[in-house]
Image (cartoon, rainbow, N blue to C red):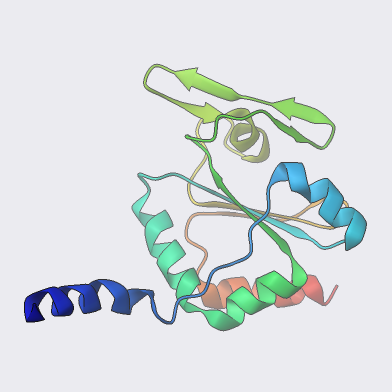
Amino acid sequence: MRLLAKFLLLILIPNFGFSQIKTTTFSDLGNLQKVRQKPVIIHFYTDWCSVCKIESFQLKKDKDLIKMIDENFYFMNFEAEKTKETIHFQGKQFNYLPNGNSGIHELALALSKNKNQPVYPLWIILDKNQNLIYYHEGEFKPGKMKEKLREITNL
């Protein structure tokens, strides 16, 4: 019984202290922007990307950053190689492109500067009118992210 209690404690402890960012979807974004216009952060990632996992862990630990994002931005997590639904964005339709056992979503290709294979993680920040204001490939450390988001919100 003691062993079970210790095991449960070890499993549950890492979850304390982590916060969740409020996320939205492309289908909800239009209605949200009608209620309150805010810039949009789109985070493209894959489940095989180790940098994406580290980054996600660091982000969840930073309560100040999560608060900043929740108050000032709409946030979308987008699994670029597993998301299969059709996305309507900026007046265009984007679909999943299967390639054997895997594939990629057209939206990841459309928003990436590398049209053949996006670099993950990929961070796209759009203003309230969906114009690109910041593009970041690779790890986006919390300190750098806070700095950039402060700069954006002070425009």
